[in-house]
Length: 295
Image 1: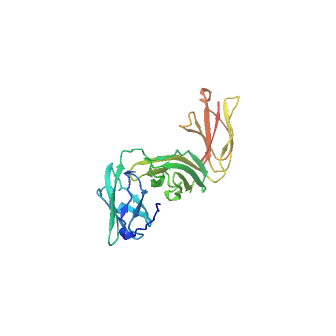
Image 2: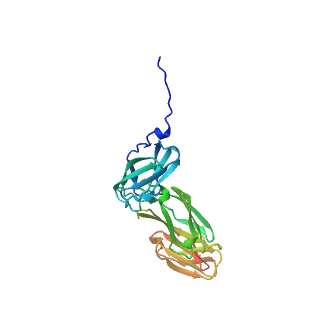
Image 3: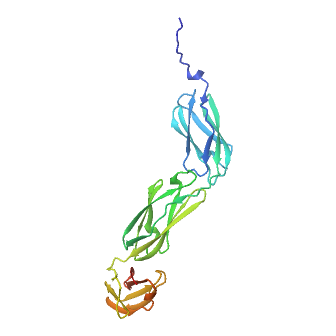
């Protein structure tokens, strides 16, 4: 007869050991540590863990951490800022007053990735002065790095319309939102810049038209009269009204200035040549531009 016997070997008689840790690969741009699990045996529950690096320029020892409790631990690895491709040997020691266990792990730092960060396109926007705009967008840090690594900043080409301090970012990870508060009517270009630890950056911009909160100028559709005149009618409020014309929506020419709203008749000799566009605004409402067209 064969009997199975279970024998508990006291810790003092067990050989201290750290489980084998396979070679690791880490991207140079990680600002969040890569977790590597391992176990410690033969030292009980209370022991001291230390780590050292043989390449301090790429992975300083103060960028190697431990987590976990008891015999189940996690090695946390971080590269230094602007790391290049290299190999780092990390030595791990688990020790007590009377014994210790040592192991090492080879870490390949991948510096070959050149993929830049990205920010999704932002479309042009229109809001009323004093209004708040919230605009969602997405980001990525590139090279598989966490999106949280991307540092976002904003700028405004016209800080009278939207001061930079009136722009902030919400959200986390790859899903973000820009929120801004407009001050006065006008036009500005809002830009979102994202930069990573490697020094690579990306910028996305959009045009923001802020309309006056006052009563806008309304330009009714123009009519071509039988006598060759063009009749336009404006409705709104303001001390001075100006009508402009354009053939391409880029270059505008003032054709008439009126002291009050109402119908106006004038001859536009270029009208038969093709589509003409008209816009009107009041001096009290500069950003209010409403376009109409006639053939």
